[in-house]
Structures are given as C-alpha cells and as structure tokens.
Image 1 (tube, rainbow, N blue to C red):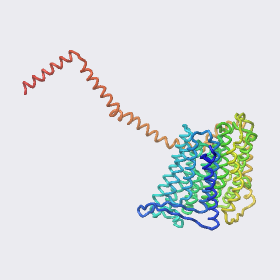
Image 2 (image 1 turned 90 degrees about the horizontal axis):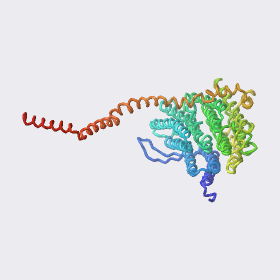
Image 3 (image 1 turned 135 degrees about the vertical axis):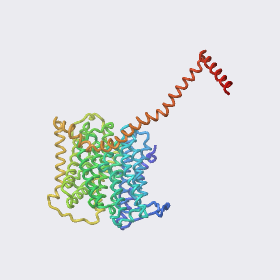
Image 4 (image 1 turned 60 degrees about the vertical axis):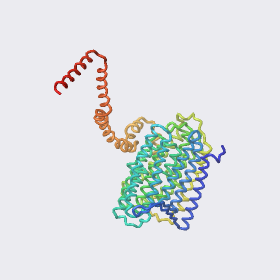
Length: 577
C-alpha cells in the first residue's frame, strides 16, 4: 500500500495543514485586533433564535491549532503503536471525531452548539475508553460517561435558563450585571459543568480510570481535549461568573492539586502517575483562573498540552517496548536501550516540574508569583507550594524507577526507538523546549510589574529543589522494612487512594440503588409478581391439568359415578320441572 493512501498519514497531513492555517489566522487576528463572528439561524422558538454560531478570535484559533498539532503527532505516532490492530481505521476515525467535537466546542460562543461538542466529547470518549474490550475497560468507560453526564445536565439547565434572555450567545451578556438571579444560576451550572469535565473534587475518580484507553488516546485526552474542555469553558464564561463561585472553585481546585500530588507519590502504574499529574495541573489552571487571571490559565493550558502529550507518548513507547507492562518497579536502566525516548521523557518531566527555560517554567513560575501577590489565606498558599514540591517529587521518583534504577524483570526485553514514534517525540520535544517562551511573547502584549522580596522570588525554585531531593531520598530508602510497611499498609490506604474518592463517588452512589433493587426483586419480582404472574399461572395450570388427566384415566369406578350422576340429574329434571 502506498503511504499516502494510509488513513494515518492522510489524517496526519490534513491536521498538520489545519494547524498551520489556525496559527496563521490567530497571528493575523492578534496583530489586526479583530474578531470574526458568524451566525447561521436554524429556527426560532418562543422568540429565541436557535443559531449555529462560530466565534473566530485569536484565542479560539490558537487553541484549535494546538489541538490539531497534538492530534497530528498522536495519529502519526499511532501508525506504529497501533500497527498490529485490525481495527486501526476505526480507531483513527474515532480520534478524528474526538478532535472534531473539541473543535466544535472551541469555536462556539453559543450554548446550543457548545452542547453538541460537549456531548460529542463524552460519547466518543466512552467509545475510546472501552476500545480494549474487557471488564476493566467497560467499568472505566461507564464511570467516565456517567461522571460527565452531570456536566451535560448542567449545560442543559443553563440552556433552559438562558431562554429568559432571548439568546443563547453568552457573549451578548458579558456586560450584564452578575447579581441577577438568572445569571447567578446559569454561572453556577457552568461552574458545575467545568468541574465535572476537568475532574475537580468530588468528580476526580473518572480521570485515572480513563487510562484504560489506548495510550495515544490518553495523550490526546489529557493534553488538549477532554479534560481541558472544562477549563476552556470557564475561561470563556469568566466575565459572567460571580465571585462566590470563584472562591468556592478556588478551594476545591487547590485541594484537587494537593490530593493528586500526594496520590501520585504512592502510585506504581506508569500511566496513572501521569494521569494524576494531569489532575494536579488542572488544579493549577483552575486555581489561577479562580483568582482572576483567565489569560494566565490559558497560557498554562497551552504549555501543559505540549509537554503532557510528549510525556504520554514517551510512556506509550516504553510500554509498547516491554510488551504492555506498566509497573514502574519492573522497569529500570532503559536509557541504554531507548536513548531518544528517555531524552524526550526527561525533557517532558522537567517541563512538568517547571525547570527554568522549559515550557512549564514560563507558565508555572508566573502562576505561583501571581498567587504570592494575591490576598489568599495562608493554608491555601502553603498547599499550592507543597503541591508544586510534590509534582517534582513524583516526577523524580518516576525518573528514578524507570531510568536510574537497576534492571527490573523486563530488563531482558529487546527495547528500541521506533521510527514513526521517534519523529513525533522529537517534534513534541522541540515544542516542549520552545513553546513556553514563544507563547509568552505572543499572548502577553504588555508585561505587568511583579514586585516581591527575594525570598518569595526564590521560593518556587527552593520548593522544586526540596521536592526533587525528597523524591530521590524516599526511593533510596524504599528497601527498608519500616517504610515498606507504612507505604503499603497505612499511608497508601488513604493517601494513595485519592482520599477514597473512587469508593465515595462509585460505591456510595450505587449502594442505595442496589439495596432498593434487592428489596424490589425480593418482594415484587420474586414475590407478588411471581405469585400472581408466571409461577402462579404455571402452578394452577399444572393442578388443573392433573385433574383433567385423572378424569381421562379410563377407570370403571369413575364411569359408573358419572353414569349414576347423569341419571340423578335427569330424574331431578323430570320430577321437579
């Protein structure tokens, strides 16, 4: 087969051209300071026009360009990763549907058209999570779909309440007062929808469970599509949301950041560690968005998308080389076998930690400095910086287990860098180095004055250094019996299980329905329904058919009794009638 007829390469080229077009259009709109607003009226209901709307400004085009760029790299990577899959065409089409749904969400300022992209993301994500058809994937898919249905219902309620304003284009009401009850209610529903899609507490359980999907899908989901949809929606709605909801979201996002950072230090599944780091970074985005910096949250969203996609693709290359094994304790010293993958993995990990002059440094350092200059309480301040240190701690823990430690049980595997995978890793590696500075030059038209003491300025680097040291020291001490007991016995039962979030959000919600269902089955299905239904009819028919069988048994006594009975009846009629 010629390469240009392969669906992977065709999709890769189309998405790459779309990326170039979107970035060029975004630069043009920035320099000309223009916004393109397109409306297509479908029909009218109760004086409200149902329209298909597209908002083309620099933010939507830049984000759409990043989505297309990462998607093109993921699809090119998948041409090697999913090579032996018989249904690779179906897989690529599902990924393209996922990208289309995200694009529809990005360019929509209208709640009706937002709902199309929002529901499309939920539906296609379910299809991708259950792509490997087994019980674990089915459970993870149902948890993902049902958790996100809460946000879908919130969007539907927002659509119903915005009917009072005469239009579903929320951009028309940016200058509208926030104190009206209808707008307070709508903004509350939007915040709830953003929390479910971006997996903030108490909706965090579905995000690590979604790791049942193939690794290229995880790379796409956790970098620029599904989990970032909630953050992007709140960035767009930020002028309309009341301060009460912002402070509520701020506390939950900081707790989410801290919970994910602690949980990742007790996890041994390679993909789940990276998934929990995504949850931590979503908390960073939500926290800076909650205190009034939507542009800074968007900046971190873009830089995070690059290095998180690279991190997942490197993890996928490692998993692919060791025959789908994901336990980091069984890896070790893979730098000699896969030097390019390990190099890109280290770049992505250091960018995640916020090491100077990589992509994550420009956004995370600025976010922490803005947190230092804001009027937040001491507990939230400490949790934010402790969470930053925990990020570096589990990143260096991951590097130690997979790169620096001795050979694990998979040391005998024949590992090497794959050709198409390496191209995607190289391109994303270069982007992870350069994108932070380039985006900071483009997005921030003017620089704000950040004035703080030297010890606060160096606090971020100090916390990162302490986190790296603690991460390495804990791993070097990991062979002691005492730490083994606490890590696996006491601490991991609470800290390592996301504060029992999967149990609370899954088992606690289904226990009442199971109890009511058991009572219903016992008293109705196996009770009155059986007595008057199938079993009752069966027993009566059995009894009567037995009686008829006795009547038809050809017994002489029965015939004589019947004969005398008829004689008695005839004589009674003759005498008395």
